[in-house]
Length: 79
Picture: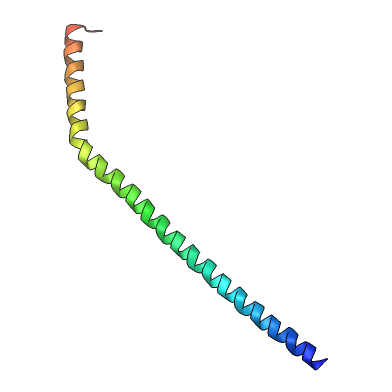
């Protein structure tokens, strides 16, 4: 009877150690996923910000051209 209890305890310890190892791996994978998601969002937001700053002079030139064309149109054909 005592040998049977000892065998069950040893098996329980082995399963607990394996479970602990698997849980640590899962926790590490979750941490890496959070870090990569933060890096991804930072790159996405940063590239959008840089693209806006790069294209902003061109957009303002287009807006100025459009407003001058509309001014000419309104002077030629008033409503």
